[in-house]
Amino acid sequence: MPSPDAAGETERVLRICAACLYCDGLCPVFPGLSGKHDFSIADMGYLANLCHNCRACWHACQYAPPHVFAVNVPAALAAQRRETYADHVWPRALRPGFRRPALGAGFFVAVALAVMAIVAAANGSWAALRQIRPGGFYAVAPQRLMIGLAGASLGWAVLSLSISTLRFWRAISDDAKPRLSLRALKLATQEIVTLRHLDGGGPGCHDAGPGFSQSRRFFHQIMVAGFVLLLAATLAAAFLQHVLAVAPPFALTSLPVGLGVAGGLAVLAGAAGLLAVEARAERAPSERGETRLNLVFLVLIVVTVLSGLALLVWRDGAAMGPLLALHLGLVTGFFAILPAGKALHAPFRAAAILRSATERLSRGRRERQSDAPFD
Image (cartoon, rainbow, N blue to C red):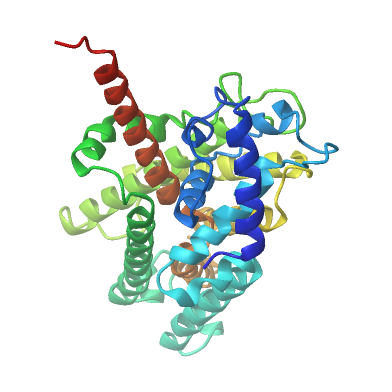
């Protein structure tokens, strides 16, 4: 169950907001409060994940500190989000990672080192990696080993994220009608893909003070586009290898390399931009635990992508073997720890947006029925 402190503070803040609703037009969280006076754990989890942390409410709120009510919606909902992750994550053994992000980083390093040790053992020793003929990836690690490690860790991540998201959706959608949710899927998908609610009510988020900025939205989109390009690079590489019988490493002018470089640079740019946003963000509306979760996730992304780009640059030298072992270890570790980190916010937020879109359709239907003339 969520921490009593986080749940109690979230409920207190939401009750004040429900009585005020001054911020009604800023984001979908506040319309979701309309007509409510009591909030269940599921309600609070839904609203916390619907919040995009734009902080518009922090600067608009008349009850924010130093007012005696000390309403801090962004911090309260951020703490509740972490508790929601921990409450619904599968398996439950991953729960500590959301309360102590350093544990996730430590596990990431442990998995990476273990994979590197496996690759070194397959070659006799770590020193032997530098003696392998440059350019021969499968001379360092057999194809089955590489696919097995990366595939198993990716499959684990997809399985865990899927089950965790399903558990969260079941918790927040008890009163949602399946047919209406399907109708709302198109609207929700548009809002998810365009990051519609990272606009602070229109002008942008408050990344650093009262000024408006579209930086978080831009860097999120750049990073997501980079991951899409990396996926495309992987598919292109699989096509070349398994259909056209072209063995890696591929030429620098090949499609997989071009897509991979473009994707890697885009991910790096997005992650670096988001790290910069975190660095200059106001501390008052921030929640320390979520900030740490963000930083760990972004740093792991940067380290993993940099290892891949380094392998591309030095793949024709003696460093190829150690760099390939390092990159394989980091990729495996990244996928292994993915369900216990900030990555969970993406499917949880998507589920919250779908419920929000469903509620809006339901509300519109009721309004149309009430406006219909009597016979």
